[in-house]
Length: 60
Image 1: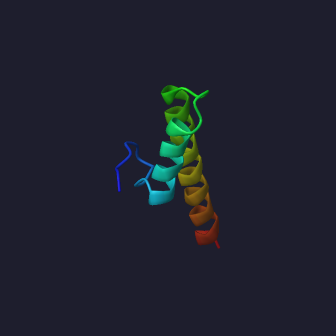
Image 2: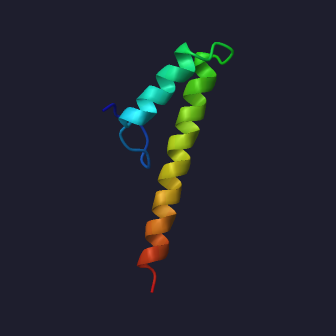
């Protein structure tokens, strides 16, 4: 696993690494910057959704 910087993000999973490699190798019309930005956005979105879910479940 690979660490991702940021307070809400977590480790990159194997499927995420495979997705990144596929986007970089198989899909040539996307730049590396676009792929990494999308991955960073996705990880932040997932972390925020996870955080909100835990907040909602902990409220009485």
